[in-house]
Amino acid sequence: MVGAGAVALMGTSTALTGVAKATTSIQIDWCWCTLCSCLFWAGNNRESTAPCPWALGYHNAGETLYQMPINYPGSGSPSDPSSFGIQAEWSWCSACSALFWGPGVNNSHCAGTGTTHNRGGTNYGMYFGTASTGTDAQGGWDWCSLCQELFWGNGDNAAGCCYGNYDPSNPNAGEGIGYGPHLPGSSTDYVMHYTS
Image (cartoon, rainbow, N blue to C red; front, side):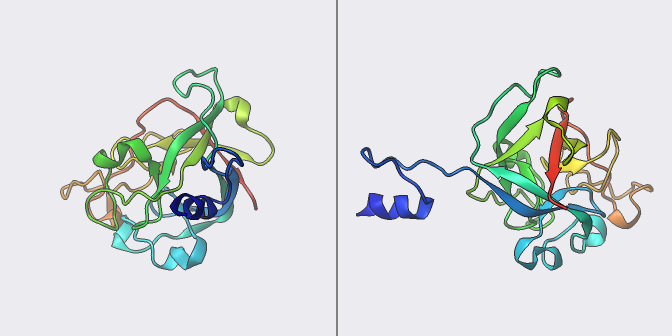
């Protein structure tokens, strides 16, 4: 009975073995924060409650809604510039609502907890490579090696406001109250697909 309950919660199962298989799908209501430049989930009124390092307030959603693949297996090689596909193991933080690199949780920085991100249970995938672009795609997304979040830099090496980049003497932090910009951690070209 325990196995059957677990399978029911996952939403799918294999008929004979009882082994649960994750259902692939797409989740909408992801937004770019115009203040800190991260990607965050704005569903369930999260925009008004999800902490942002900019002025230590809340995220401010841009006009475009993005979609995220859920439970897709990884494909391609993000470290190969000529490759394209989906990189698995991205996570949603239940404290600040940002998307971050799940395996980097122990080195992450969250504006909601003041320490590391709270890793949710869903496995998100990130598109990468120029060949994965289309009419509903936007390149220029990067992974920040300081906070582990995905942010839109449009090729800029100093974009947004990163909770992991704190320097109280930083005169350029502006409303970030001492928080400097995100720091790209790889040369991978991440791509977001939008719904509006």
